[in-house]
Image 1 (cartoon, rainbow, N blue to C red):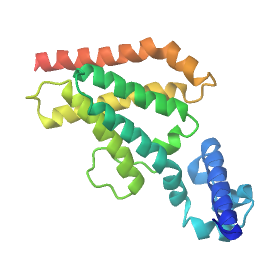
Image 2: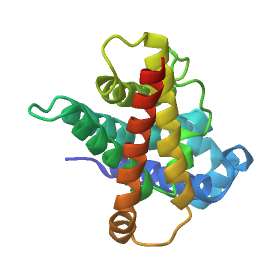
Image 3: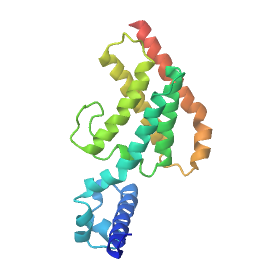
Image 4: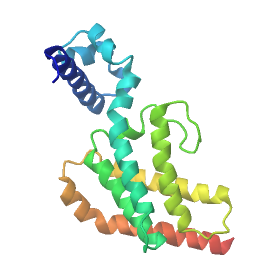
Length: 209
């Protein structure tokens, strides 16, 4: 059984994370100070440093578990048998969009803050490793829809374009107050058409080459 001190410590940690999430979601990450987070959490900034060494540590802690959960979901979809590559791409795309819109107040935090290139094999920051893992899974799904003889560089370019397309879709609705289920249902035909357009465009490019 946890001691009173351990319980208080865990409560303080949760309060810090909640305060940081609220401030990061409503303000630019770089403008939020450690002192502001500590004040919102009801503790001193020195107490905050006991749990997190800096704002990037907070960012990583807030993002790690949700992004890992999404990656696991996408991996499971990729491993499904009896599905066409196009069906898998559609399902993974839907999972990604659903995740981003469900976490729309945290979307920028999860994917944009302190971000670097998505195609680097060994990024410096652990959070970027998670982001790149998600891109890698989407890249696999895209590659399966392309001819097997396509050059790796061209396949990567197609994956990048599709990844940016999904982010463009998500970015359009990150500030929407419409409930998630309603939004997903209303936009389902648009999402499906986006996949169709990408696949048709990729096929046209490959035929031309």
